[in-house]
Image 1: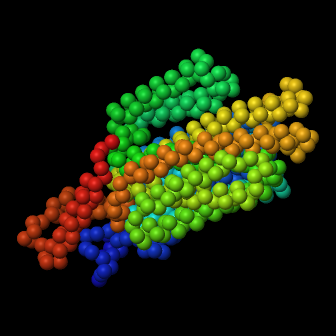
Image 2: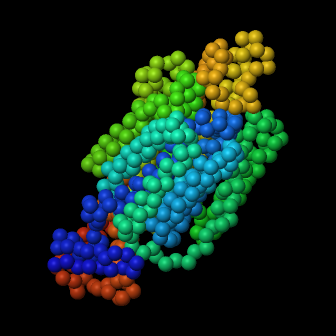
Image 3: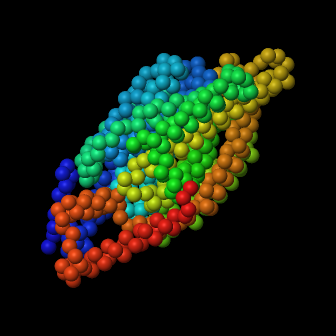
Length: 575
């Protein structure tokens, strides 16, 4: 016998004889894969929109007469708006239809990418890349939340591995595709190529993703919190970008920008502690696992974004490779991430253990970054490939599993904001990393090129206006100076990032491993809806009125509740 339960605005949930009475039915493997295909396609669009230009940026900026600062800000602008918008998307995900939200994010991503492709100056490109980051923030936050909706934490490891694999494919396929387009039909097609994928993702999500209705709540959005958070973060990024270039680090302008930004962020925290529905609920930071996941993710973000962004400059300027070839040379790093994320995700699902793999990943990331800090403009490319593979393995073991560990401790009502908060700090770390490391790289290159040209008898020489040079057009002695400067500068970036990866290792060491749950977010929400309906109807009966089968079910439910309470108590002291 089967039973069908219907909820307004969602597909019926059918249960069979093997299903325990009163519990929501788990989605079949086929239903999960169908829904997951749309979610992962949306994630692929987000990654492709970002990664497709990574190998082409030196060519794009050279064509648009952009400077090293403009190069940094083409990336930083996207990371900045992604960072700012991620917690806002996460809060909306706890209030309104998540499927509609991710489709809106896809539309924003595609339109802004198309406009970026029509840019005639580096300033315009930076502007539209900033709008692109708003859509990317939605896709980053919502994809992981939706996976938590349809898959239990215990099973989520292998599916998180699939997400890591999609990220790897997007990260390696993007630069390769972007480089091929740039070398053939032109760099502007980098921004148009994602449109078909986005349309396919919207259609797939509409047809396959079926979620129960969100609880009807009337909550005013935290506009002041969002505004203050945006202003404070933007101020800090502008400060680290311009300090040391437009004005000295110790100047009054520098002090004013830094102090003003910190003051605004302190005010934002004060607002978040008093509003009804904060963008980033401070209560999340009472959860030890969430706090450590935030710290680890921020460190990974700095190491990941703050170094991989400048790989294309090393490959093209320091080694004289084309955009296509520079994309190909990043394959070892992506292969490491692909193998680690899929393989380790499967092992986590099979064993239910995750901390041991995260520890290995944190060590691998730190060692890989340190090894990359030893390269120069003549280092054997095969050796660099080995170093990049080690970095990729570390990323594959860490990034998604930090999110998994935190999600395992969150209730369905916290899932959107909690997941988005972790993504927020990861992208914030990445944005700060790109800005700070980009400023260090620009200063190092200017100093080394000036000194190198002076040794050739060229007084007052340097890069014109700080622009990124096309080394193929330079005389041999000058080309050698520029290649040496970029090789040493990018190596220094990796060397600085290595100690930052140690922070992620410490966070993982302090992480307390909690048994992975066995219910998806949808199951938990349906269970809550069912319990609420039963309470409203007065359907709760005394134990004496229960049949033997119902009494057994209630006993099992009590045991499950006791297990959950024990897991919650084992999270450790509040932070």
